Each structure stands twice: as structure tokens, then as C-alpha cells.
Image (tube, rainbow, N blue to C red):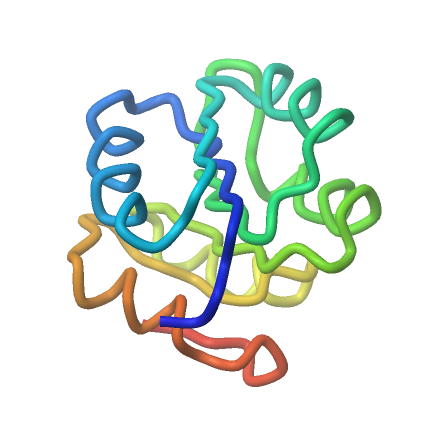
Length: 124
């Protein structure tokens, strides 16, 4: 796995956040999560994570709309866009996501996305 020290998970599904945290905790020192786009933005103003997992569907908007903003605030962060809607992949990568994971997530798909080079626009 690539060396990431910090992570932010922005997803309104608590179970998914806890699963990702469990998978990542063996290799990432600090993991925070937010359950809305607004709370994710607030955290990003104080915390520049090495890697960001961003879901698409939230009660307060679409994760796709946050990608460009995230890449502006945290240009060196590796952004992995996660959603159950496969047809969002093209837009997510076009907007600046470094990787795309389709739900349901698996340990293997997460590990693959973490290991791929950012410049390859990794997918799983």
C-alpha cells in the first residue's frame, strides 16, 4: 500500500465510514470522517489529508460538485470518488478525482485504488 498518513472519509453512511476506517487503520495514522458535504468542507479548512474518500449522494448535495473545490483546497490529496452509480465515473475523473470505486466496496477494490499511481486515474 502507498504511504498515506492521514485520511478523510466524506460519506453519510456510518457503516461504510467505519468499514473504511477499519481497513485503513492498519496503515494510516489519522482518519477523520464527515457525514455531510458541509461538515466535510469544514474539516478540509483545518485538515489537509493525504487521501480523501468522497461519496456522491448526500442530503445536502452531490459529491461530484465538491471535487473541484476539494482539489483546489487540497491539491496534493489523493481523491477517491465512491458511489453506487457507475455512470458518474467519467464526470468524477473529469472533475479531478484520482480514482473511482463503485459500491459495494471490497477490501481488494480499496487496496487497488490506494496502490495505483495518481497519474493513471486509477479505477477498480
